[in-house]
Image (cartoon, rainbow, N blue to C red; front, side, top):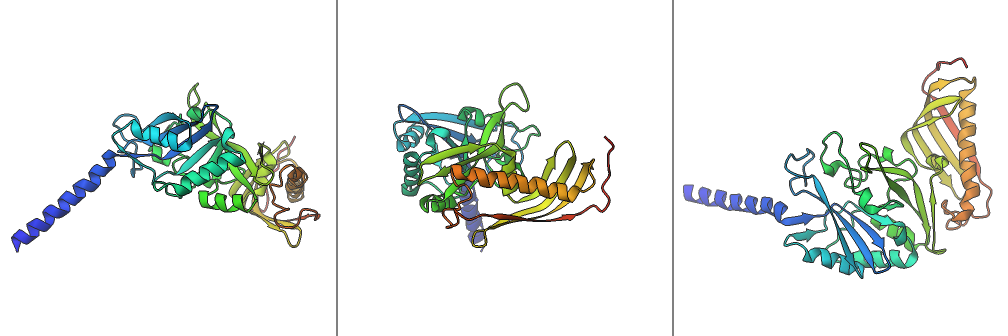
Length: 332
């Protein structure tokens, strides 16, 4: 009996060692950046250290991540060339995000990317999309000021904190494909590199939204503040010279059949020098959305044509509830 128990323990021990060693012999890619060039493509592969994979605490051994830039005449060539540079097994099952350079956001290139992912036996479809107008190598110069694991960064965990996406949340790849082939206008967060913690670009900042319409083969980028009012928010701050307000549980719903855009939110006043804050805030929201309805003709980011309501006149209904009964007033 003892011999049997010892044998079982040895088998379990060896199995555990193999599972642990796989972490060190697999090349786990967390995020990929893609750029079209005159010669073909550039691929940027963001690799956390093997010790960081599955660990939310920053490793004290060496760099937390590396970025490999590989060229290729085709998308398949980019991945094949990366595979040739290492004896490690390239693991694409844990990709969290793909960042697309502006040059990739057009009909032919998006079709190639979708076909490549679909026909690959290595890809897991469970990742999210971003677009950028910055240099991709700068996008991956990520900084962890509090020594968090690189796994906690926005591109490695895109939906951990949706508050950082002020205008739109990143689309899941499968949802993107569905809307893309249904000829809907698809929206993707527009990110850029910023010098936050030192003089060199070291952080990413979501500062707008990029829209693409496959039927028109048209790509438009926007950084308008008004787009924040088209997205639901758990918490959303607005301020101007007259008022500072925090919107809580901000929701927006477009009723295409009824030609109504419905907005509801709780709010609390942070500062104010006006008497009727609620009416003032309603006017701000109404004006911001109204500007976007007019601008919608550029690319139909509200998908009015897709929902057979392109020629309808929309009304905006806003319901607000004050969380603070007596806000403090400031003299001017």
